[in-house]
Length: 535
Ligand code: FAD
Ligand code: SIN
Image 1 (tube, rainbow, N blue to C red):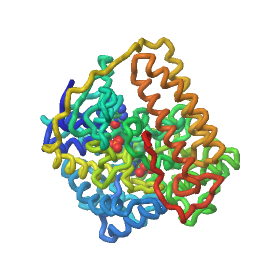
Image 2: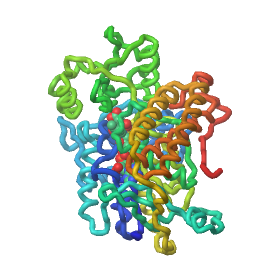
Image 3: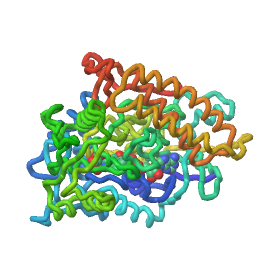
Image 4: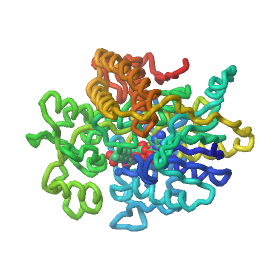
């Protein structure tokens, strides 16, 4: 059994920020499921929102966030994020992250604008902001003597005192507390046990539960599922953000075309070359994402189109190469020159607004189990996330969570010896096809039945399918030796279940949840959807 003070699961910006703060107070073990830099964070393009220019003000950023959140934001979380945000961004710059500066005045940062923002406030490193942030943080993490970094380690389940009591056939305590995790070391195919005083879920998003997503394959909602199985309160899982503009291409179907392109004047057009967003919202292409994604979905369905187009032909080659080098290079490699060709785009699952419900310190309903970054539901995003607010939230809440958990570290009693992983009768599976088939099935029915536009009937259909799949996957899980794919599949099933469950409970349309059965918001009944496995 390995022992540590802080077990951080995930090496995106949230996990790394937490680790760098917490390591001043105790030993940090950070695990990540594949390569060290593979995360949603590494693919972030547009940037990080922060009140920076003189004509901007925290009150404007707060208002924009609240408007996008459609009545469900938690005011304190918004306030905390917006006001602490610039401090964290300055620290990030001190840690070595370099953001793009204005060409006309290199002493100032170039601020982009994105949908739903009333002011230019998006700091960015060209269009590879996430890569730059991850580079700066990872360098420090790798060099720090108090941080043990383990790649190719997949957390399977979070362990708690109630779990331990059940396992030892004792009476479970009233209040639960995290004490560690089982972890599969995929390089050795061994399940290891980590005892920790503080467990931090920094596992990112769950885009992989949909067949079309901007997320890389690591985003299988593992932290959401682990917290759920441990009995933590989960909130607002129905609010899945679909990004309006993912590249439509036969082989490159997860490549994001940043919202910043619309901020720089990009127009959405149909195959006839006509704009359509002004028919849906007066803010046209700069309306919040849910509105733009739904408008595109409607154009695709009513006109029988495969994709719509983003027109950037107003920009020169030099401007495009300076502002959007990653996107430009990718498109050129596919034979698309955006200064001459409209870019084919479709919406795709992008961000989970819901997640592990936390307090303002990032702590879940299970003591000493913290959730930071995309896996958390802090209340900042409400029913819809404002563009570029998630990197900011990740830094702000990882910081607070590290401070809070460090303060209490000395008072947390040592974790008792824990039972080793019990493989039972699990043998090697000779039917890997079961995993790929089930995987494919879930992702497709989630897209078709639990996508951008929902109905009660479609949700019920998904619920019935899920029940069957759950039983099968459960049986498979206990019968065969665990593998990375099996762990992810089991998690996807739990995440899909939570999304469907929450969507069925929300009998109105609000923010990202749009159902034809209740197309209007119900203002008499404005509340979070909270679910818990043990309730
Ligand atoms: P991640 O960065 O996703 O990190 C999760 C980590 O957890 C990974 O290291 C993963 O390997 C690890 N992990 C997962 N499960 C396990 C497990 N079981 N065991 C061990 N490790 C595990 N937001 C913005 O604010 N601005 C943007 O411009 C922006 N652009 C985006 C562009 C794209 C293409 C995408 C996909 C997202 C974008 N977002 C953007 C959203 C933002 O990038 C993410 O919300 C944010 O980076 C999440 O950070 P995180 O640290 O919480 O999770
Ligand atoms: C983008 O660059 O469009 C993504 C921004 C975000 O998801 O916040």
